[in-house]
Amino acid sequence: MSDYDVIIVGGGPMGLASAYNCAKAGKSVLVLERFNYFNQSGSSNDLARMFRTMYTEDFMADLAYKSMGVWRELEKDAGQELIWMSGLLNFGDPNYQSGPEGNLMAPIKNMERLGLPYEILSADQIMRRYPFKGLPDTFQGIFAPDNGCIDIPLFLRTLYKLAQSYGAKLLSRSKVMDMKVEASSVTIVFDNGEPVTVTAGKCIITCGAYTNDVVNKIGINMKLEIWEMVYGYYATDPGPNSTLFPSMWFQFLDPTDSDPALSNLFYGFPTVPWGLPNLARIAVDNAVNVITDPAERKITPAANDLRITADFVGKHCVGIDSRPNYCGTCLQTNVSDNGYVLDFLPPSVGAGHENVALFTAGWGMKLAPLIGKILSQLVLDGTTPYDISHFKITRPCILSKGNE
Image: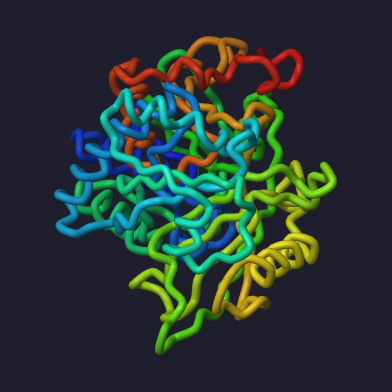
């Protein structure tokens, strides 16, 4: 007889969202977090992330649209708002081709198809509404109101408390040491000060950059790249005639001199109500420090990424200091096509591979409640009504040779 119905490895947003859904369905749930909860070791450090509905790909736009209802369900259960719907301005070169965040103009077709409002802005209109300067006349912008800033500290702690309230057991500092997948069960040995062995009928793996540390134990290796993303908080003029970003924003522009290290994919957040006043987060959506093992993390922000962001702020932002007050890093797990991996383990694992569902890679925070719901459906029902066909673990360039 199993100790739990579901064991979840990884207690970040995806793991906690999965625990919340499984426990709410009446299942016994154990969550194993390698570090402390709410740590800086993965992808959920800092104050805010984007919720956005502007996607180039139809299937991603559909999931983002459907996730809006899942976010509202979670907020209703929690009794508090988790997203500040301030909108999103995408702007830049209308001829920019697809990068990690798609391209500038292609999302329009999906917004029209889904009935989502938007407004097209000229460079002059952008500079009148936002504290930008010196934008090329050829730049265009798309503002969409159904986008917003996720309150990350509140979101994570809300999932944690709700999962506990529905009966989930949440353990911190519990590193997985061994794992065995069988036809009717999953057995995990973890170190919580001493070795502990537990079994469950099902398992969910949501440990981001640390995924290979777990799946290697069952003979699987994934081709993951881990970007050490750099962010900074810049002081804005407190007024009178203060500097105010009215919403999130993202610039689409090819890198300078075609050099990937000189990326022009900059983004920013308004000063969020739950953060320090008169500080705006601005960063580059790129990383020069790309690793394959989270143990290789440098922690210190890459000087190149700080420099090109500071140069952008000095050249194109009004009333903002061109050096950050403080900065940091987080780990962004990626695969070659920039997509999610959201699937059962591959058949090469053998009998019981569908007892384990996995999520890693991609920019997933904006869909975290929906991803947690999908993962819970996979292990509890064996399927999901949502289209996750694009996120198969067996698609090319995800698994190392022999793991397909």
